[in-house]
Length: 400
Image 1 (spheres, rainbow, N blue to C red):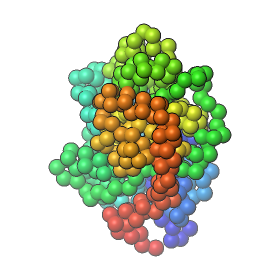
Image 2 (image 1 turned 135 degrees about the vertical axis):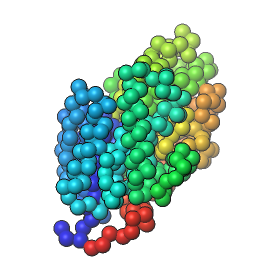
Image 3 (image 1 turned 180 degrees about the vertical axis):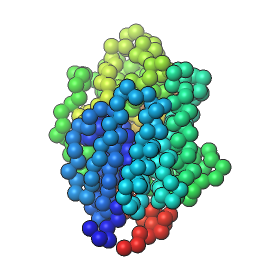
Image 4 (image 1 turned 180 degrees about the horizontal axis):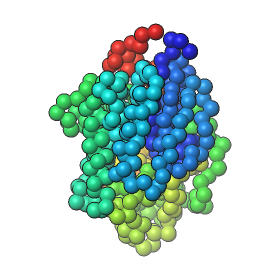
C-alpha cells in the first residue's frame, strides 16, 4: 500500500510461533501486531532450529520462517543468520530494521541500513551478570560465544540508533562502549488484558502441587543470573518457619556444564524441605498466568534484569510480587507500594519479604491491587506508539 512504512524485524524467538520463547519472544509477539495496527507493514523473519508451531495471521505482518538445523554448529549458524538478514534487507526497501542485539542478527547489514537495535540482553551481559568468564565456559562453546559477542558488538556500533528496554540497560551499554549511536528508552510491552484474562481461565501447569500450604513461585530459567541459588537459600529459611510452604520452579534448566543442577540446588535445603520443591520446567503457555494467580507470592530474584517482563505480567494479574533492586525492575516497580523489592544476592532479605507476604495475605493482596493500577501504560499499542516516535527522533520521519 503506497505511503505505508515497512519494517524488517528479525528474531530468534516469537511467542506462539517458535517452540521456545522467553521475554524477548513474548515482547515481540505483543509489539509486532501493534506496529501493524499503526499502519506499518512488518516483514517478520523468524530463525528457529525446529519447525514453527504456527503461522501468524496478524494483518500487516508477513512471517518468513528460516529453519537452522540443530546439527549446524552455532559458530556457523550465527554468521549464516546475519547474512540471511542482509539478503532479506537487499531484496526489499525498508524504512526501519528493528532487531534485538541477541545473536547479532543485524551485524552484516550495510552501514546505510536504517537499523534500530533493541538493547534487550546480549551474551556479554548475560555472562557478566552470572559472573561467568570465558575460562568458566566449556571449551567447546568458547569460540561460539566469542563470535556471538563480536557480532552483537558490531551490530550495536553500526546501528543508526539504539532502543534500550530500561534505564538500567541504557546505563550498562553506555558504560560498556567508548562510543555509541544515540539511545532512547522504550519499555517492553505485554498483552495486559489477555494476561489477566488467561490467569482466570487457563488450566494449571502439569505437575502443579496439590497443597494446602502457601506456594512460592519462582519464575525464570534455573540460572544463577536469575537468582535461582538465592531462591533456594531463601526457601530454606521460609520452610523452617512455615513447614507447609511449597516452592514451585517454573523455568528451563540452565546449561549443566556451568549452571547449578538439581542436586546442587537441593543441597541448599535441609533434607526435610527437599520434597517441598516442585520442578515444572519451561511453562510457555497461558498455564503460567494461572500459576501466578494461584501462588501466594511470585518471586523474580534476578541478580540483574534488563527489564523483567515476567514481573510486569505478575503485576497485570494483580498478584503479590517480590523482585530485586538495581536493574530493569526499577523502571516500573516501587517497593512497599506495588511489590516488595530486595537487593540482589540477599537470600535473607528475600526470605523476609516472602515471609511477610505469606504471613499477611491482606498485605500481599493490597500490593497486587496497587500493582494492577497503572499497567495499561505497558500495553502494546502504547509502547508501539512510543517506539515509532523514538524511531522518528533517531532516524527522522519516514517520507511518504
